[in-house]
Image (cartoon, rainbow, N blue to C red):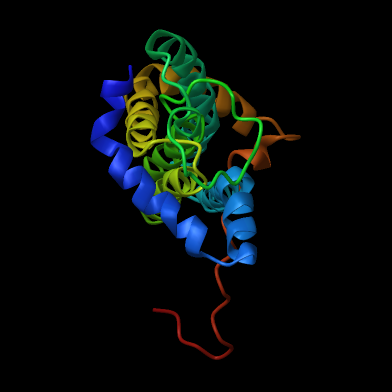
Length: 215
């Protein structure tokens, strides 16, 4: 399927060429960020969104949405397994010389990118609950895809396909997932032992100042 690769080979070399020109410490940093850092950042964003969602009036449905985010990521990666086997696209460094490959051991098929799929599913799941943090997450997911091309392990279209797949799974399956998760989270919220994981008690209102008149 070499002909299928042609449209984005030039962009692959342009982005990966940055790795050849960058100092060694920058490549090591991008390798770490591309492999672990972006996913860790999305996990922290999810925890932040959960912490704030617990105090919302719709805490049960909001937390259910955040539970769906990692589940959506897992489902999206599973959906990608047959796609990869069907397309059978080799990694770019196996068919194109001159690439700077920053991570070893990537011998499976290239389309679509698991990292991009996972990152975007997490980001979209967060976005459905918290727009502000979700937008940050989407930017992180796009950067994760950029890192995979920079590292020489994916074509740009592998990343675009992964971002699209993660988005589709997170959005299209959300109604069914939330219909199943919301009753479960509602039952958890009613539990005295684990209810705080779903719904936090409201913060106490500040007391009126001494001597203040009652209105």
